[in-house]
Length: 316
Image 1 (cartoon, rainbow, N blue to C red):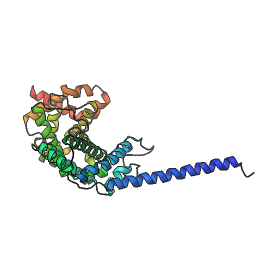
Image 2 (cartoon, one colour):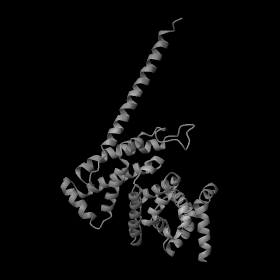
Image 3 (tube, one colour):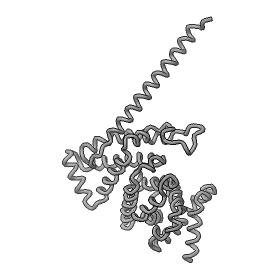
Image 4 (tube, rainbow, N blue to C red):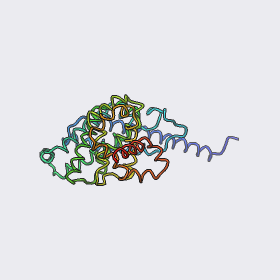
């Protein structure tokens, strides 16, 4: 009549477990927000910057994990960041940390690519009372975790609308410029997790989200920093820099750029040299023909394939 004591006990245990899970979720959310708040504009290689890498790693780990979670059934492309369950990027925007990470990452990469990088690192190692090799390890961790956060963030239109696009465009352009310099002297290395790889994913995200941001302004910035031209020339480098997944992202990103109204109207502002056209055509033999064996993928990048076909015929 009143139910068994076993049933009541089971119901109590279930309620208690649910309550504990709620408390745990709130604790984890609070920890995540605190780590986001701990991200500060510290200069690269300072003691404060080194300490901050722990929070950066925590946020990057959560962001990457949330990115891999299956999307909720019934969710659509119009869903906002605040409608979903990805807390890391939401907190990052709410706390105003997205452009802070970009700014420090840009400063860091400029330092690492400068001619006096060794002197800077040696000086900071001495000030921190550690070895130069240790500082380089910290630098690698910072670059990877900051890059992961930025890549995860840019997959959301709210982040694309918030990010400092002038600085991001300058950053991408400078990374490509230095990479092309390395390629010319044959000093290409494994860039896994580094900005030389991550900028490909930034461009893919920007291309996918062009409809959500001011296209003309963004493409003008790309012209100012020679992004499209250098993008094509990096992809056409004789040496292999990127793996298949990265090339898939690169192809989708480049397709979005050449399909844009701004490119169609101002192509000469994006491709400023005949070498750019030659590099574009070279992509087919290097990797595009292989990727396009997948008919579905080929259809998805038809504007790029058509452009290459037209330019190849002109070169004959």
